[in-house]
Image (cartoon, rainbow, N blue to C red; front, top):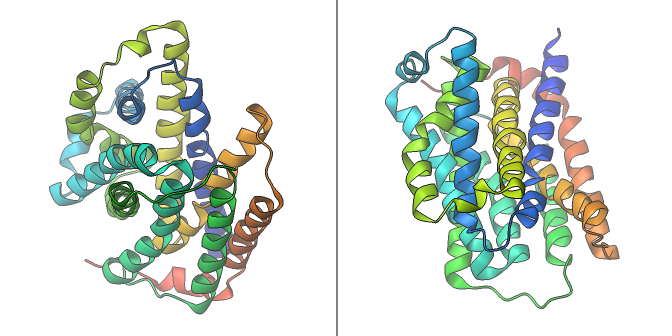
Length: 306
């Protein structure tokens, strides 16, 4: 397979992961009444880790051996990225609203990831990347910021948590990209989620997980663990090996696009002209990124920093 075909495959896998992550909001809305938002984030990671550990065991592998392979530092920053995002994103939405919180957390992540990629992975920041990312972020702001008729107000604490969520989200990608240099796809996803159990299990127990033990709660929790965490983490791990970190996070803006599309289809929420224009801008940004001819050569030459 040619380098360009590998790059396209990586982009499609990252977009597939983003589409899977985009279903989280719908699933959270379907959870039993009174479900604590932190348990939604925690149950995703806990169930995903158990599913991936069972798969590794079924294949004859050892989770302990997997956790011993990568340097502890890379394992730690990945776990902090995974759970840090869960513990900051959902509270940010409560404090400053879904629209503002999502705009900050999801919109800032590509910029932070681009800086991290340039500093730690020596990835070049091309003019096409700046243009495509700017267009996609503006589209994200229009899509999320005007998707509700309610007045938006920025809560300082909520906004700070949303920026921290963006930083954790980007850190997750950097950690997984480094883990991918010494682990295969499933091992990378397993290491990321299993290491996060240190934070996930206490949070799940502390904030009353009893909603999981109802038929509806079990269905939602299972979907959260498998469809929005275990599978997309594997897709994301493969995609990160084939494309730049900076590009992965611009492509991840497909997540809010998916979330809004599902809200319209399932919850009956209709998008006004401005959010629809925002969706078009996101697609334009992704198209510009995918057709950048410089990436075809540069990705074959770029090597991770030691």
